[in-house]
Image (cartoon, rainbow, N blue to C red; front, side):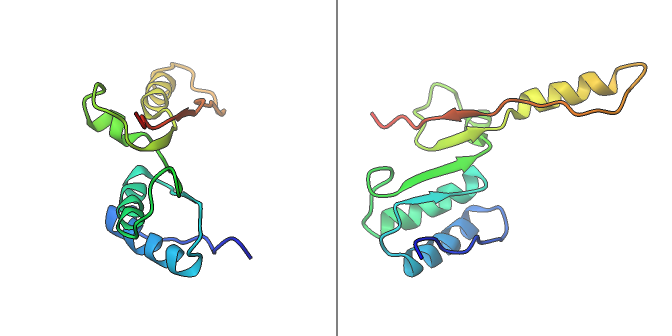
Length: 120
């Protein structure tokens, strides 16, 4: 079997390191890791690089949330591919809904965007 079981833990870089260590031990030739957050992906990235493998050349790595973009200067080189779930748009949609005088139940969606790492 080429896949390892999904791992669950705290959404922190340290946990990303632990999970990536387990994955690399279980599947030494793993070529892609999908992480539930950018923080987890940053921890996984450290372990992948410490093992002598390159991201993204040897192991494709992706995070979710695009937190890096929210936390840092947008002119800084992006080193991690991520899925931007639209946190700002979600916040705007929620605020707009809460301010509606006749709030109706319903579902609204924010379209996620894939943000590719700058590998140059």
